[in-house]
Amino acid sequence: MPYAGAAVATGAIAVVAAPVALSAAGFTAGSVAGGSAAAFIQSVFYGGSVASGSLFALAQSAGAAGIGAAGNAVIGGIFGGIGALGAGIFVCLN
Image (cartoon, rainbow, N blue to C red):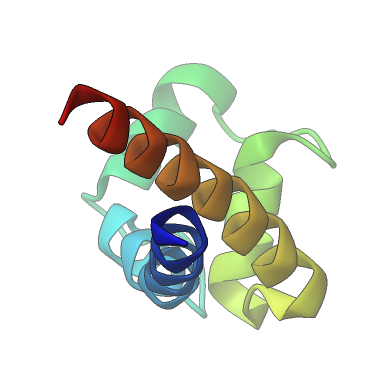
């Protein structure tokens, strides 16, 4: 049972934290925030041309329009699995 609780808690926290993390990185509703980590990455790796479908484009889309149900399901599932794995390791070590 500790695995399920850890999975649900970790997944829920990740779903809530994802928009905050995107905004903090500089992916905002209007565009990439000047002087942010996202602006630095864009200038170094992409310049003025960001490829459609790239991770950067997906992050900007999520920052501008929100993550959506499918994205939240993926985030919750991935981090829920990580939480369950961490709980399993912790239980085995004790």
